[in-house]
Length: 626
Image (cartoon, rainbow, N blue to C red):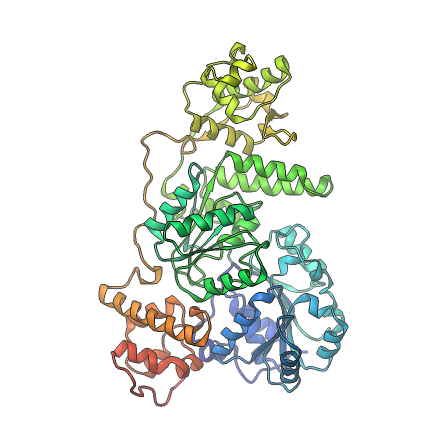
């Protein structure tokens, strides 16, 4: 049943959240849901998804219920809403009985605009009976990709959320996710009973993120170079595949003077919580984590996301890199990728549980990810194509800034494949990359002589390429399916059906020249490497930048005193705008993007004191929103 709101969504946006206009599809989504319609919303991380359900919940009568898997972050989400004047609460296992009862009483009395629940709690009969007693404005299903069996964050509890439409058919529902292929979108609609919902697909493009993938040689040293040359003092996330590598990487960064913390599921819950809290609340902390960390992280000023291991899918990679630059300012998505990553991921698929169809699906995800790593095209263009969005080259990724050129790797591939074939046919043996390269280089090592590999006809025929170059060739052949990892668990290599056309000269093998690491080659600096310091400050004059840093110092003290993340006070982008425009009174400060009525009332005096250089005086008298 539709409702004509007393408040207009645009009024709420301006007065409560401090923004002048909706972005992209936000306005259309909000009008549709506020009018009582169901929606499926696909919008990139940092695109403003939360406003798409928060504002309808505020303009419709009753309380909006947000279904979120992010129990550990609900407190921060609610605190951020309260900080802009939204009446919000949550119910989860972190609260004692009295707090839960108080929240329920507030919801029943009509004192909440938004109530956050985990899907497990919604499944309880008691919770459903409690919701029956409320006037409900909207149901928001956040992180809706968790419903997908093929999703990287699958939560079986999400499969029961079709109850929302069945039990409360008159309450509009909105399902939101930051990443979903067309097949995942269909699965979301089917499993949530949203087949008739209107689907909104925002652009998946995040032009402020510079995507870069480079050959893995000394990954920790490469990571240190990235941080020190481009992101010194910035907040960032480093993803590793294993718990062991998370802890080793965090320890190494700390030894190099970088404020780094580990995060993985094997750490005690208290340690995980404390590390996450420090990352959210402090500037310049680097979180080293497995993919157990990050979903729902609202920290807007993460300036880089680095991967030291190959992600399993483009969906996962896109979601993880999307945690950088949520404030729209320049950010870096960097990955070191090597031969061992390909071998490891292939073996993980072979050992994974599930039937042949499941393994085939995992293989398709990996092949798409390898295609992104080895592409000659614009990386952003390839990713957007994967999500069904045509685009032009971005001019901001490494393949645009330093275009790779193909070289004819057919002969090199034939030499390598011939060696693999001869080992199998003549010796009934399989070996890994190191032994194959030694044979091609003609090295009479102990293992070569032990196995009499110096008697193979391919011994010494590959001296034109270095070890690193041969490893790049092997990696690209694995990515193309022309070479395979044997399922013997020993990282040995074998030919595939696709190998024979190459050996017969019927199929050319174009390879990336930049992947063949050339001695003396240099890399152009990217746009994001050209400046140092906080991204928000890079366009400021020296005088404005000095004010920006004073505002950040004030913000850090204010956030610490209130025990909230710094961005809950103001994000960097808002502080930079204040430093640039130097408001002299309440009206001018209220005109800055990101300054709503509640924040003007809470922080206006202090901000103007920093800007004007005065302390203690009452500078704001009567705020004039509008």
